[in-house]
Length: 611
Image (cartoon, rainbow, N blue to C red; front, side, top):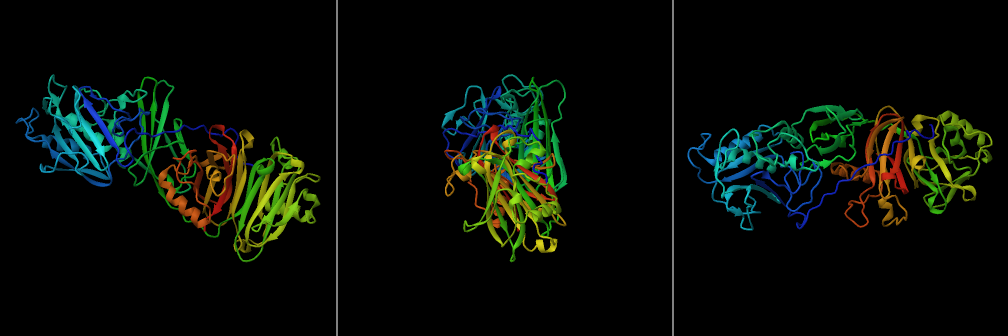
């Protein structure tokens, strides 16, 4: 195969989202949204998505904190007491008005529904496993309502309480707000939006100019608006859906109009989850997944914001369908291009052969030959040494023509479609038969020279049927990740009758910890998979999305791969390795490993054929 397939200039600079709270331990977090005469002054805001956190820092709009409601019914206990009879809209009870507000939300919900209970006996208290809806003169005796505060929504653990300020004059009516009389229904509709997980778009930073019941200032809006519906669609599986087979293509774009420049924010919620996540890979007006995988299933949202705060939102759910994979499909060729340094910074490739009989393998270390492909800074004289699992050298070559079977090496390379080594070049190659097991190939420079080199491992068996009984199932290459052409690039050729699933990982932080304790490990590797110049998939951190982590853990265990660090909440941070489970059709692919924002260091790129 060609020595590299990765297009130039594809390094992505990605933003990070940090979620913090103050003064509340995890698992006992109190969320509070206070509705004022201006409706609400929130601690942090979003595009109508999610209630505010008490004393939490301001975050960017459409930022998520906490969770939406779980699947099924959520019972709200209405303890509102008697009302002036009749109310201005003809209702005779506060509970009837509250129920009509809940029903307006219910008509937009899919996987969850509000139910109500008018039982007045439970205590009206926080953290009592009852979702209280009531009038109170204060906030559970712990603090007073502000002079302009109309209502608050509190969530702690499983409780979601709504308290209306009984010091105000309330009624229920339609139309523009009336002086001195607070409309209970529109306030209730707003507060129940907080219970669902929505927040205030007009207190976002930067400001969002959108018409919605969830705005923090009162007005003539008395029913749910398109922006409110967009939020509910995203959180509760009600958005328009597209169905794409695994390995198919999916795109989403923001429907912008008018003058820019626009800023874009992306979110993702996996199917079955009530916890949205920032979709870090989306940074512009559109995003395309070139090869959809099972872990991509879920709901995506993109929000475009114009300079004057106008918003354009697109919410779409992606449903995936499985494809039939083939156990007869195998890795025919795997290779890695990287920088060869000195000492511990040489290029180190590991490979695993399965089966019960020896396998014919062609191993090559290309340096000078890369110049024909426009690669600069190549290693002028690579040497290749192959070790077995007992760390014993089993094969070695400096210049390929000096091998005793150089004619067979050239003929085998031609048969396998490998690019030719020129006569007289100092590229290295080994053609040998290897028993099943693990091997390590070390590529270094003669005389401690340095530069870019390519290590290749080819399945050289003549008969495909025989080759499938003793397979090349894994390659892992450790090398220095630089910038520009000095990133780490792994190539793989998949051959067989149909698609097969592979585990591909780019590891840095885990290498810095026990038992590896590698100094200079790449802090934050970024993994991209290409077919030719087409980007198929990418991953920055293996813990994002969190919903993909169980499948990645299981795949690593099945493949015999060591586990990755589980969390980034350490000092120094961890959990920033990258990993993908990819189902690939037969063909040639490239895995590119770069560093976040141009960072450099030692990384390990791995490709596993899953059993």
